[in-house]
Amino acid sequence: MNPLAPREDAVTPEPRSPGLAHRAGLGRGQLRYQRCAHCAAAVFPPRTLCPDCGEQKLSWERSTGDGTVYATTVVRGRDGAHNVVLVDLDDGFRMMSRVEGPAPEDVAIGDRVRFRTTADGDTAVFEPKEDAR
Ligand SMILES: [Zn+2]
Image 1 (cartoon, helix red, strand yellow):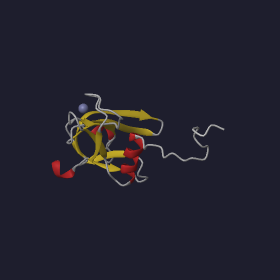
Image 2 (cartoon, helix red, strand yellow; image 1 turned 90 degrees about the vertical axis):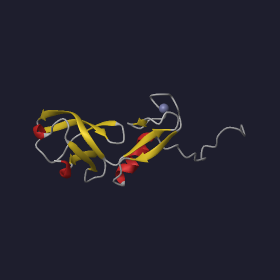
Image 3 (spheres, rainbow, N blue to C red; image 1 turned 45 degrees about the horizontal axis):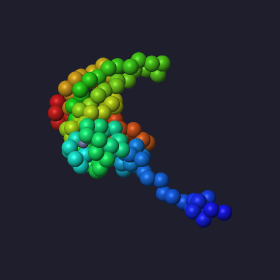
């Protein structure tokens, strides 16, 4: 038997993937993104290195959750219609999501929105930010 071979029963903790860390944040009602230690870019979706400069040192930050609709479209399916939006977060990153509350076609570019999670805590969605209307 090779003494240097890894033992079958040895448990090596898997490094938590960026995607898992992001979902863990959602489970606590937090929208998290990464900040590059080298160029300070806001990084989203979660990655293992900065897409701007290649730096691997990315720290997690909690987003304010406030943003502005950059683009919106209505998707019509068998179960009805819903919107798909791109939201520019005030923290400096853009994400795809949906706005819940208003009719899908009533969501407009420039609308101020606020992040929340779905009831199951699995998905980041947005709702109109009332105080901005
Ligand atoms: Zn960078």
